Amino acid sequence: LAAIAVANYFGITTKEAVEVLQKTYTSPPGRMKPLHGIKGSLIIDDSYNAAPASMQASLDVLQDFHPVEGARRIAVLGEMAELGSHTEEMHRQIGWKAAEIGVDLLVCVGEKSRDTARAAKEAGMAEDHVVLQKNAEEAGRFMDREVKQGYIVLVKGSQSSRMERVVNDFLRTPEKANELLVRQEPEWLLR
Image 1 (tube, rainbow, N blue to C red):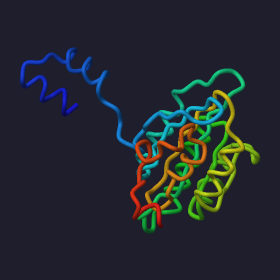
Image 2: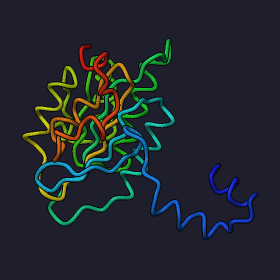
Image 3: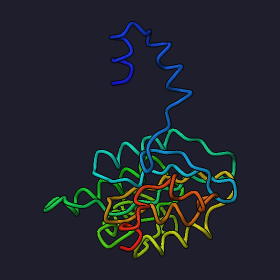
């Protein structure tokens, strides 16, 4: 929107600005970036960070995707940090939201995400459609085995959850991780 506003200021129409942006703009790593996953899956990489509002908005985007018959919509959600006394309540809200939009599989990552998993089940998700993983590495290995042709997978979590590691495990081109994923600098890779 900022680019379109500047374009308008300089006499470029909104239509012209949108056409140029469609050809030249790509979203930054980890911010709702569509990526090719293994086995013909689609990854919606939103691993940069997470807060309650952005988690809910990401789930709304996932809801708008309609996979081919037999494929699944999967939400792989890490913890949200810095919520203080609202931590349990906010994680539970995300579980309710995941159940509400009807994700086919909810993969919760990290101890705080236990509340997300619990709430999703309470909201009606089947026990076997909710999986809890200890950390991003376990979740990545799980997704590597789980993902199939046509699956649409949203990956989101706070920086401390390191959800880009999940994405890397089932990214079709892991050799391009440096340009496609967030937190690929040496200081991050060593953590």
